[in-house]
Image (tube, rainbow over all chains, first blue to last red; front, side):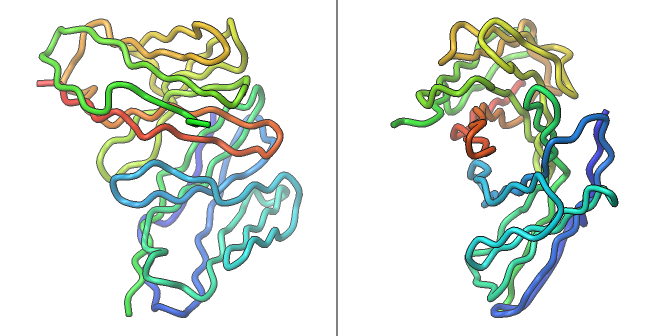
Amino acid sequence: GQSLEQPSEVTAVEGAIVQINCTYQTSGFYGLSWYQQHDGGAPTFLSYNALDGLEETGRFSSFLSRSDSYGYLLLQELQMKDSASYFCAVVGGYQKVTFGTGTKLQVIP
Amino acid sequence: NAGVTQTPKFQVLKTGQSMTLQCAQDMNHNSMYWYRQDPGMGLRLIYYSASEGTTDKGEVPNGYNVSRLNKREFSLRLESAAPSQTSVYFCASYSGTSNEQFFGPGTRLTVL
């Protein structure tokens, strides 16, 4: 089976940088994804890492270490609109996608 | 492109009633999924389908059945609804090109 662990809540100041960690245990692994979900909305895709290293997309970056079964999402220049829940997800064989329990990010002025 | 569509958006059932949640995607994706999300929780995989004609159980399949009708459509059926199935249900499809899941708007189901 698969299990993913993330912190349940994180609070950060507008304009700051925040890192959301994800550790996973899985029987099959192709990549690690990150999704954002605002209250009442559907998840939306942020990033995907198949190989070790850092992927950057604007203010968001995502990192993966396959040997450590660990990844993180880095959000820079935080804005109030970044207040949302963030989920890591493992992509396994046959494109089975399993989500973590999510991290609720609160951005404060 | 409509993306992923789900019907209905809201539904209230009584315990023991049955219903089918419909999902369709117009992006020609092979893989489709059904998740449930309880308040303040993550998404739990109910069933998924890696291709037309195949379905596999996820983490929480009990009480549900699915049908991959064709490449576009993937339905979820509750045969005898229970209050524990009160949740928000999301359908999704997966792009093997961008490794991105696309989600529908969700169905908010309440079982009384």
